[in-house]
Image 1 (tube, helix red, strand yellow):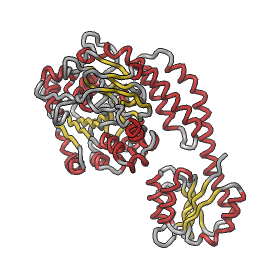
Image 2 (spheres, helix red, strand yellow):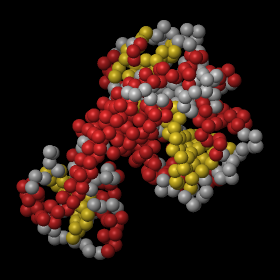
Image 3 (cartoon, helix red, strand yellow):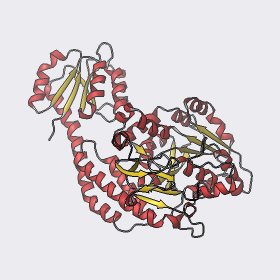
Length: 520
């Protein structure tokens, strides 16, 4: 078993050497700091190895109470024990309000410290061991489920179970986490087979089988609940995966109660240009091109591909409601637009329906590919979720939603598609007109590994436009990403372990749609 590692910050740390020696004899590893600034810096560098923090309340410079929120911002779950000479009630209340694990009054003796550690660490160990045991018990059930020929509803259930275990398993459970990751890979393999087998039936207008998909999302999930006398806000967070929803859900539930959590499947490609236009138009991309040829742009066309979402939404509203609906569409793609939303959010109360497209998560995933610092911050799914949680908690969006407190509104939270962390390269050769996307390609004379993709030689069959007579679409399965032979090793290292979208995976295709109501 690895040693428990303690970070102890105290400006009189030299006087605590007997305590440190005592802890070392008991098998603990202790790293020290003499001020709050150093404690925060050490935790930034070594946080993944540190199990508990002892924090002196009255250090000069940055006090313990001032360092506490900075440490909690890095990791809200880290146990912190506040140690102080000050018995004033307000100090204790402030520390407890900041979610400390324990509170000790100086002078402390070694056995007090040991007792506190036992209480904190043993509790964590027991929870960790119980969680691992429960997952091991359910492992076979999930295995039998994902290999048992599921329908689309059962696949959603299996995906939710896997995400639930991802969220439950502690970061220190590396072995169990690895097993879960392998099970998720297997699930994506089977899910890809399922999609390949059934996708053309799902998008066939004459069959009406399968899950609710992008082009029927508004009509099936949202419009039936509009015009009931309560203002409806639809918040579409671009690139929001189901696991990312689950980490921001607790904050939203402070103010709104969940009335229904459901799902839809994103169409292919699981990319904004296709899925979001389909959502707002209520049509597959091929039908959008047919009905509004001046509003649709193919991948190779110049200019923005999502410039007419409000137009498409308006047309779908006209087709769907017998009575006039007062509606608005707001798109947030930068800080200025986010501030404007925060300033004017209460105007939504004057509408029957307000649709807000918030692009931050999409920008975050793309920025992660481009920025080395974000690659370090979001190196895996757990870190990516943590980054999403931190963004949301400090975002103008959350501030805007808080301004709606006490107002009776109906809120939908959804997305257009998710992302998957790509790890396995697949070589593709195409001409200059071939698109650059890593998870799907459109082009002529494409050469590719057939086992890695779903190929669509007749785009109309999948409800997609045909840019050229010989255009073919290919969609990456599982965690594959497309690479050209040129500079293969460079781009393999550059894009591997980045979050991409456009292809076939549980994470990209199974999208959350949640209906909430104000707590009034």
